[in-house]
Length: 205
Image (cartoon, rainbow, N blue to C red; front, side, top):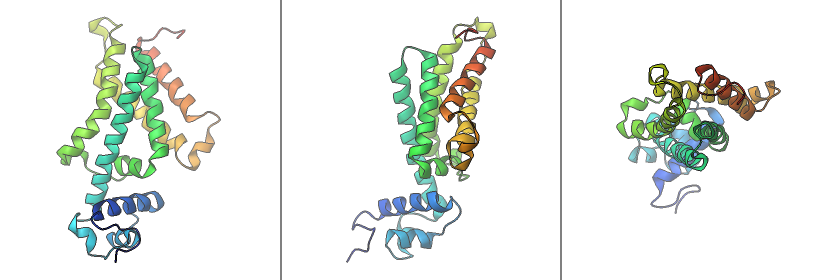
C-alpha cells in the first residue's frame, strides 16, 4: 500500500515536493535525505532511485525554479513592450513576486550554493532570465551615442544585483519590516536613480 505523501509511479515528484517543504522550513542545508524520505512517505533508501544526494535534489529544484522565474520575466517583458524602462520595472516586480510566491525555489536557486555552471541544463535555463534584462538594457542604452553606451551585460547585472539585494533585505522575512518603504518602491526608485546616473533617462522622468 502506498504511504502518505507518495503516489505510486510518482516517487520523484513526491521527493521534490518534500524537499521544497524542508528547504522552506529548515534552509538548504538543514535537513537530510532521510528526512526527505520520511516526509515523502517512503523508505530511507527510496530517494536514491532518482538522486545521489540532497545536493542533486536541490539542483533539480533550482533548475525548475529558474524555468518558472524565466517564464515570469519573459512575460513581464512582453507585457510592458515597447517601453524598455517599463520592462525593467516589470521584471523587477516579477523578481519580487517570485521570491514571495516560491520561497523554496528561490532559496534553492540563490541561497543553496548550487553550482549553476557545473550543470549545462541548469546554466541554460538560468541564463534565460538574465537575457531578459540584457535585451531591456540594450534597448534603453540606444538613446546614448555608441561610444558612451555602457555594456548591456554590465547594466543588466547591476539591475539584477539591485533586485536581489532588495529581495534579500526587504522582501523576505523579518528584515522587510525595517524599511518605511515597500520593496517595490525601493526597487523602482533605485532603478530610476541608477538609469538617470547612466544618462539613459532624463532627470525629470
